[in-house]
Amino acid sequence: MTKPKLNQLEMLVAVADEGSFGGAAAALDCTQSRVSHGIGELENTLGQRLLHRSRSGCTPTDAGHRVLATARQILRLAASLGDAAREDAAVAGHLRLACFRSVSTHLLPSALAALEADHPGLRVDVDDGFEERDALAQALRDGRADVAIVQLPAGAGLRTRDYVADSYVLVAPGSLALRAPLSWEQLDGLPYIQLDCAGALGVAARCREAGFAAPPARTLATDSSIAALAARGLGYSILPRLAVHPLPDGVQTMPLPIPARRQFAIAAMPATAREPAARALIRYLANPALQRQSEAYRKGLLE
DNA sequence: CTTCTACCAGTACTCGCGCC
DNA sequence: GGCGCGAGTACTGGTAGAAG
Image (cartoon, rainbow, N blue to C red; front, side):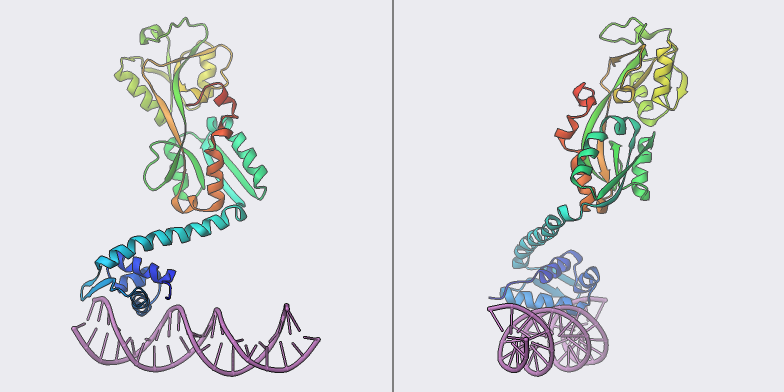
């Protein structure tokens, strides 16, 4: 018995999806005649009518529905064959990775070192000059980055894979006598310094709902500047724990009275995420064994 | 408007043959 | 036995026109 061919299965799936031979032909970039030939040959091969034809289009018969389900599985498997063959051979080229500075400082070195050791033909350029979460997703959409470590929710249109989570903590002068558990009253009288980014503003808003009443005395754009002011006793702030590591002299951190954290994800545009080089980078970044090699992980800064 | 069929052209494959 | 070449065949995909 002649076996069905992959292109005939593609035609069947396309006709079912598009609802007509003409639509399937457009989707497959061939002529309607070719689709008609292909479907006819497939029906002859299987000895079953697979489609109801009408003036308004086509719908699968009962046999067609059964064959369609298997055909989709076969096409997925066929596609995965190509991926398996390309996996190692094509992990080469140039990728641009976008992230926050704190992520590049504390999380990337182990993963990138292992990746470049295993795939010397792959070069990864890191742009860690991002301050705003939305800017990372936009860099992916604009094509300025191939892969990014974004803060969830990442927005529509991106393929994401969960990464690490980082808690927000109180960052205060070391000279300030604080008792756990922290209460907002312990901070009365000290200026509050706001980090100017959407994530920190969101956390501050949630803290206010929980009784935190201090207005920002200053607003600064970088976490390191805020930590330096706190070290001088000039105020306190609410910052991601990773962003103030390693802790400067004269600064202490303490858990907030409410749980607040930022969840990171590795993100890419769907088409990029399918490419072998990008898949390799994502795999190395998400590798728990490599993450455990980072100092931040060993010190318990990550969740 | 859509599907089906006949016919045609280009390409890929198979097989036999001769040569080394 | 392995290799290259050419003829014949099969397959793929196109156009044009008929039919529902």
